[in-house]
Image (spheres, each protein chain N blue to C red):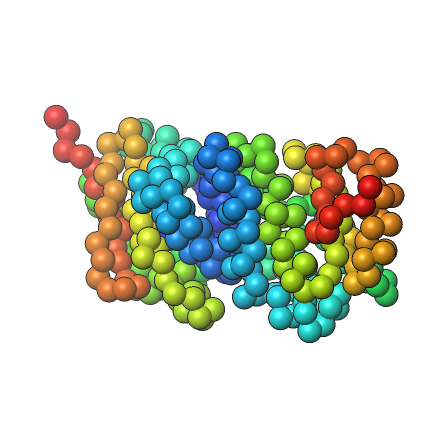
Length: 148
Length: 165
């Protein structure tokens, strides 16, 4: 069950503010500071997902990805195996909206996905990575570490 | 991608970081410049009616419990339940204690550039309610500021113009 259950109107212009913020933090405080904020967002905001992952339960992570990308109107493919979850987004809804607004996509845009996901996985048996298949096309991968 | 639905909770983490660095004000100014894309021309060309129209859309898209009252030279935005602070509070990461300050922080610059005058009263940083009064006449804005200054804590009252003595 999702900790945050948004199901009402969507304000996509927030992608524009995120884009501006990514550039602002990286330019004024450096890329490492931006990574720290994004990772902390993943770790603290998505505490519920992280705590479930710690216990080997990826159900909220899967629900989170499918629900919020569905809400954003994204086309995606999900593959769930015991030790690997692959979430392929065919066209990033944030990038799509930024283009609609006529904004240049931040060079740090894809970092938000990777670092937030890493934050969600911190201290859990899962490792997050992102495979980039195109400018707006990626696969978010969550892989279970091999047991020792 | 951080979902639009969760932007507020990311924003909240950015505020915590910038507050520690004493960098909030400069960031608000950057956001204000970004927001010009969405509303400055509308505010300049249509004045208070433009602000009203903008917030009709925001009220819907951001799910605000917001009363908009346009009376001649005065527009009142009475936020009965702010969805933004509500999300920051409904958050396992906890709300930044200065969360609400971003709102007057970014909007005042836009109003200044649009030739409008804003008086903004917060109602406590854990209470998702606030009220702002916007005027196209500085005398009216100053009068409202004086009226509110008599009954509002100093750190909860903001103006987009130099406050009157």
